[in-house]
Image (tube, rainbow, N blue to C red; front, side, top):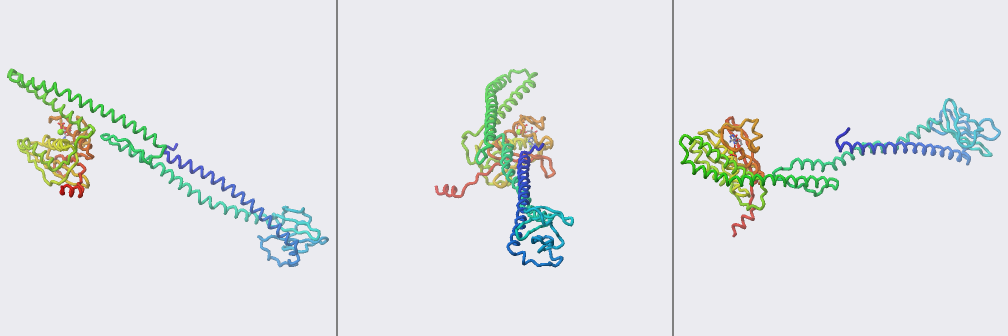
Length: 449
Ligand SMILES: Nc1ncnc2c1ncn2[C@@H]1O[C@H](COP(=O)(O)OP(=O)(O)OP(=O)(O)O)[C@@H](O)[C@H]1O
Ligand SMILES: [Mg+2]
């Protein structure tokens, strides 16, 4: 069974057209044969009429043998009371003189003839033609009628295939659009220019997208609320622990410090959860500003500088590019800081961290390159998953890169993480945003003011 709708349609329409073509061909072939036969009969009748009207006398008495072409009609004229024909165009042929008037058939010298006999008071006229020649002529004429159909049929098949392909292209485009739906930005599909048959389909998909978006939003809100609610008791717990610290026996201090670290870890996890829920949230009219990316880069370096220096690391930003992004400033800062703090966290003491900026078309990219251990290639595709941690020896919640990804997606940007390809071990973490181009007249307007 053919699964493709396109092939089914092409086959069905093509076969239909072929059947119509064949039926039409057969009937026009038959009609043309009958018509030609009637024409040939009419010619025999006309010749007989001309012979009656005096042409018989002008025929030669003794025609030379072999002058008659076998395609020609043969005419024989009898006068009453004479045993031999008065005139004949082929003396070797003797048709039965008493044949019934009108059309008849007879066999002579192994050939079949169609004969028209006209009985007049003064003469009997017979005009005949070989049946094989008549067949040849009628078939030739009938075959001519088949040419247009024979040429048109393949052309119609091609036309059917093209029309069906063109009509179904929109279905393919719709399929591509559905599979390209970004889960981070669930947008309804457009119904503009869509055929009416496909519209209900799109409406169903859009209803599904709406439901999906609302359930994702509910889940996000639940996480945000839960993290928010947990923060207060956890802060209280931390305060209690701080107050208790001086009253703990020295013998229990080590275990008590573990408890405090655990509380601090939970606090960080809750903070990260809240940040992720906020990065995932729809923008809802948050005020956007023109963010200078080079300032964000220097700010991120300055933030980690004390820790980096304490661990003997060399951290610096080079190749700065003048580029701006339209965004909430804290979002961009948080994304870049997450990448830089990962580089510091996972690179051993004494390592190097370089930050670069580069323009690529209408995007601006920030690369954070470290000299750490890198990440196993098999684990790399999972680093943006929530709670995924490739290196459990180092403390972390596994949410930082998910937050970065959500922020990049929010502004139409992207983030990638790769192992270095220059032969050294380490990670190249890159985040890119669409550049906000300032139109020249806007600049001029601003200068005038
Ligand atoms: N520069 C890097 N070098 C080596 N491994 C890295 C680097 N950046 C990220 N990783 C790996 O990817 C994992 C996920 O990183 P992610 O930032 O999402 O979480 P995290 O750093 O563990 O926790 P946090 O939520 O505090 O950022 C990390 O646990 C680490 O194993
Ligand atoms: Mg991290």
